[in-house]
Image 1: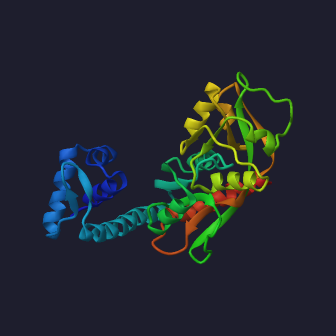
Image 2: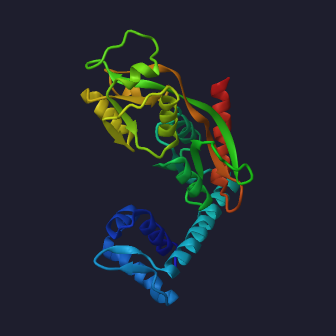
Length: 297
């Protein structure tokens, strides 16, 4: 048994596909499948439900997978700790981020990269619930999410403020003379919105319903890029966070503040309190505190 076999197993859990897992691990699919079979033979346990394609993990496979995550986290933590003792910071920072937050993630990632050029970054777009679950399962090091229902016994948090919203539009297709827009005006426009089930979308729905409004979006997506593309075609306008930098993607894009438009809970940076917690996560969390405090000043 070696670390690569455990990495292959975890990649398969992430992708749920042998070919994609092999691509993620930079090996051929036959090589990945062979190494996983070797692991099964060594453990004398079937880990994977196989048909013509990947069909999931067996009950025993799920239990082995949980141990694999812990072993790999300990391995990465050991390497990071050794680098930390040498005064270095190396490794891969796994960062979960909710879509459409007022914080441009590059405001954190770029300063961290400038401080620690040996770092690499893995960014994942996730709901707040998925971020919390990823932190608890040690699949993430840090998370940027809404601080609603966050248990301070399990997580250390750095509050970053409430997300204010605006209307993103393309000047080739829409024109507004006002400096701010009201919800009544927005409800009559063709809208593209984030998929239901997210905190951001729920906040928008509450703002509309509290005013007796029930707009019907013409497009919904879990991809920020899809929404921006739809806005650029003139198909719709979209509710986007202010100060996220999304309007800078095109010279024709503009964003107008919407009166009283905020999310229900503030955004924050999360790190789990319980072990295993790597030196990488701890140092990046403290560096983030310094970065955001400097910006506030």
